[in-house]
Length: 286
Image: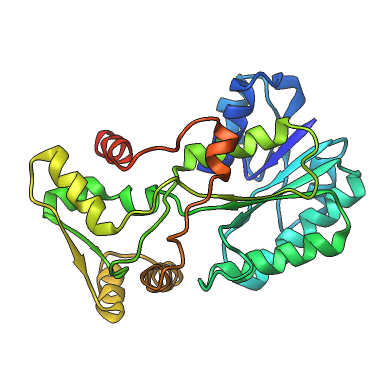
């Protein structure tokens, strides 16, 4: 049995769907979710739903019982809460005696300067200390982080950010979810560490230029000082924690934190990763 946590989120749901597409029988997959009513689409495909609340360890023990492989999809929230939640899943996986516990970390976790990497370093340390058979999926930066609002940017003629000329080895959420599904279907994955990025690193100015080329509309990348970008995001209605995460991430991108492509994602997928042109086309069509 393969158990996928966080299966109602966009990433976790796609992992389950990719498992099915790869030929894993629905009877061999369980979606661990806090609210089963939100996973009726997966249930309709024959996937078992198991209630799992990261803040209720008892539900985790029940959800992971009998699991051979588990994908721990990292949670959201304050750092200390997330680490505690991840530890609870690790403990439950240990009690279940799983053959593999895969974890969605972040690219370059040991040295990644982004604030969001702190949780992943702490969780990776907890995984190492657990003695469990572990696979680390160090996910790169979602393409959607910067193309999710691309149609609005085209309408305004401006794609704003604070990443300077920093390059980003983007990868789509779907590609990263497929890679996770493939790891879960392979043998011999204990101890493996994957750094999953796109094949090519691009700047936000290149994203804007590609959007302009495809739409025939002028779109410029507007690089803002961090404080000005913070004000822009706040005025847009984003909650303060999200604003700080985005501003910090762009600051680190400007310093080169995400500019290093690896071949791990391409190798797992068995094909090149999505091109910038394809990513922009997809974003404009969604």
